[in-house]
Image 1 (cartoon, rainbow, N blue to C red):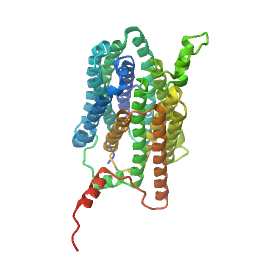
Image 2 (image 1 turned 90 degrees about the vertical axis):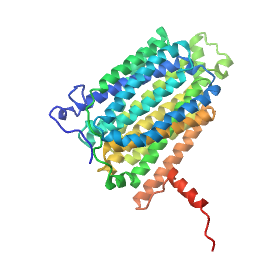
Image 3 (image 1 turned 180 degrees about the horizontal axis):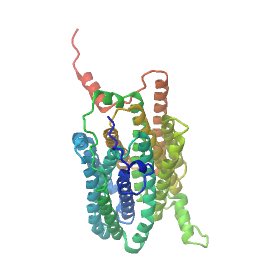
Image 4 (image 1 turned 135 degrees about the horizontal axis):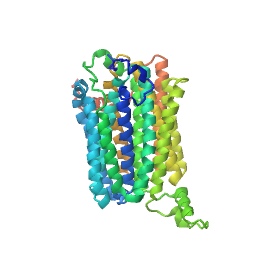
Length: 461
């Protein structure tokens, strides 16, 4: 059975998702706005602190270790406690509360670390990442419980994405001012207050049971159908690309790449209005200015907003699978731009394109699950997929951490990976249209089984 909120006289009028506390969606929407704003402020803390100043090559092993710890809760603990959280009344809500309170506590610790350039900023940043990913899983499980129909669910996810983009912009403006006046420690204090407000807002989220009953055979069959698995493979690729690009650009902004290009030249011209431009301004290696970080954050936010706004319009005219295929194509275009254009221009186009692709692809994937798995519990299924996508995100992020590479090479990798995923997804759609079984990517379980069978001694004839 699909877990949806019971209709009421007050919540029926909330299909437009206003700010009335009586509407179940409002508490979650307010929590999401505040949590996203807090995340934007944390990004500013890292941009103005030691995190973007230490030697990137020397920090790779540390970051790789933290990424491993980040993946553990979703790959190991999640499958064990996830079902219990779904069956417990208010279990996912308390996960929502815990993730916002946890980020408020870590932000308080960042006040001192960012202000004193302490190396503790690294583990604190990755604790933030774990709490943020846990929040995403809890949110995915809760959204279906605060709406009344699949149509409202699609609209709710779209509006949450739009609100997230607006919240990031809204927090970035005062955050940048606080960073300029008081430094990264002051921004960390502001983010702690925002996360604290988010934790109080999360207490207004209705206490519901995400999945009262265990998963039955029909639900398992629907979630393992060819259409759902093919869409999940495409969406997983987009999440891998997002993780890859996030850390690719993070290292580039910390000076791991010697590419500078047009962005550095523009900054030099702004500082020298007489028009003189030295060769070193275009080609000199080193850490790019902090405003490069701001440009990429802005383009990422714009890309996410465009993806969330355009996807519902496209879905009125095209099938969800074609929208998901288009999202992969957009990621390919972003990779091409990142490969062709050096420096800030390529980085910004890559970030914006990938953000737009991920936002539009997420809406397409959610719609495929709702259509092809009508009897599946929405909260449980979305939380399960989100947990897997978080692991895939970490795997993508690990590549530029373990292997140093320039941004243009990273763009080429994005282009190849996204193009391969688009071709694979297209062949799957073609096979399903012809009534054939689509190709399947090898799973860890399948590979292990094949290896064990290969190692078995053959019976003598």
